[in-house]
Amino acid sequence: MKKHTLCVVFASVVLLSFFAASCSRNGDGKRLYIYNWTYYTPDSVIEKFEQEFGVDVVYDSFASNEEMFAKLMIGGSGYDIIFPSGDYVSIMINQNMLEPIDKTKIPNIQHIDPLVLEKATYDPNMEYSIPYYFGAAGIAVNTAQVPDFEESWSIFSRQDLKGRMTMLDDMREVMGDALVYLGYSVNSTNPSEVEAAKNLIINQWKPNLVKFDAEAFGKGFANGEFWVVQGYAEVVYEELAEEQKKDVKFFIPPEGGPSYLDSMCILKGSKNKDLAMEFMNFIHRPEIYAEFADDFGFPATANVPARALKKSPPLYEAEDLVNTELKDDLGADKEMYDDAWESIKIGF
Image (tube, rainbow, N blue to C red):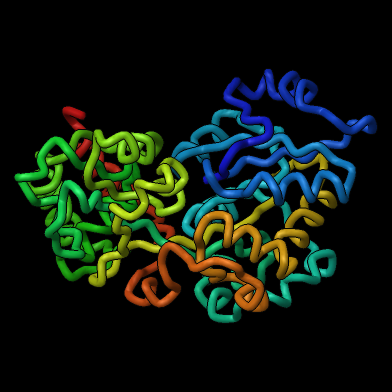
């Protein structure tokens, strides 16, 4: 979710040092390796950190937690900071993949909203993770093409929009949407509820979709290929020309859905642990967090004093998250979701 990455490394980890060297601007060779969501840290924030600490940031990106985790599991090491969502923080803690954090080196955690910390039940004492952002995916609609619609997940059942809609290629997001639409929890482990959600997606939503897409939905929406997309507001608006924005409505359905609490974690074996903690502390400076939130059109959900420093209105309000539910680590029940998702994805 980052705007224009300074040095996006798409090669294998074996080539990581080559790309880092090509991006280096500081003579001392200090580098911080970040593995983060696409469109998620503004260039201006990265540049300020580089200048203040005399370091080069090497920024690699991923489009889903599953992609991030799979890369790390097959040996995608070399990163210092990673940005998993809460359920994956829990998984990675349990698998001993994260370094413990020295909170005395991150005094700006005092600015984190206590309500956000309450939601971080996967790591309530911030032993392995520092909250970065609390938000949710929603739905973007091209109102020039779709002037009448209900603000609901039911929009994906509309056959008149067949071939003009996408949903995220993200199991927990799509399954969570279907579960809450049916009146269940996004974390349901009831086999009959998971089966009902699977059947809703297969029988009513999937037939109207072009594809499940976690990477190019913003571009496809901006160029008019798609009229309705499930996704992240900042990804959609990043791709839009200014004159297009008047014809876009982004909403988080009032029935709720999955929300995410992304955190900053230090990957086990990091060679720049102290510098990683400096970056975490830097992010939670109120003026820096406000800059981050303004750049992406976010409400400043995680950092309280940053709210007074914001200069532009957000793309959605913090209140829109009230009916959303954080995704939990499903443990052994994840296999049931994996099986359902495999059935859903057949043919796509």
